[in-house]
Length: 439
Image (tube, rainbow, N blue to C red; front, side, top):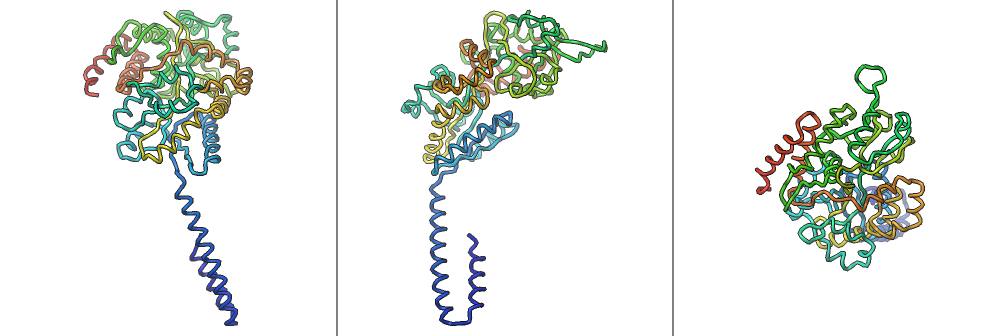
């Protein structure tokens, strides 16, 4: 309320009055109105003081998925007059912003991020464990136990799942048909041969207009994430007894396979650190791309299908689980934030979120709902990701994961640019051993 403007209006009206009796009466009326309005404004301010305004940082992409999330946040706000959540998008680079806020004692109340950073946030004392809170909720029985187990570190649950999914390979059926390919590849060698057939140089200038497959160039987590199904499909690992183990034969084989695709000339590399973008796939520059059901491809008008990640030793893929952390703030704010986390795990939230984005619901009832079944019937490629759940494994959740990922990303990038897989992984292993105990 603008009290200065209100006062000036009173004075103007008062000057216009000539009758003293009327003046006295008017003064009394105006003062009464003024006091009533002032009391009302004070009441509003007091009510606002009782509203807890929470900040939630997220980096949900593509924007269409972000819109779905923000719509659901607004639904929460409409039904909780005492709690208001503000969804704030944070762009790249995300981690430095988060760490700066934590160290500066100005963290968000809720953080949407990757579970692989759990160890780092735990060591900083930035997040709260959630198992005691979740154990008291009847809702816990509706959440997949395997999913909750994936998010544990040192016997504590440090986050809740916002969504889950896994990686597959999207492909263009028309391009497969044009190349005479009638069977989807199930092994690495079959994938290699298919990629060769799909690589086409139409004008003979040794620069293909169409490549078989897109691989992500860069050192970032998307590159590591995209390579992980091949590591797992070779029966490999990158951590043994809580220490880095990058030079096992399976890891070398998985990275060598990516280099083989490069040597065949059947791979197009993405722009640096942008391997998640789908432009080349949608325009037909590449016929295959590693990604998940959150992709814009599923909302585009191009022809597409999906097949499971081909295996070397055993079928495998990597889980794509997004989570929410409860950040350490104050007891009152944390209590309010927990109400929002409970809402996120609910059947209604998960049903609308999954149908709107293509992610798989973390709530079992949401997955069994008629709305989700109807959605899957219209998007049958989701069945591939549902069927892969049984062979989907997570990336390590350990305190030093960020350093592990950085070294691994450097090794993958070096290999794609021509370094031998074994040499690149050995250099990454040596670099990690120098710093691991100091992490």
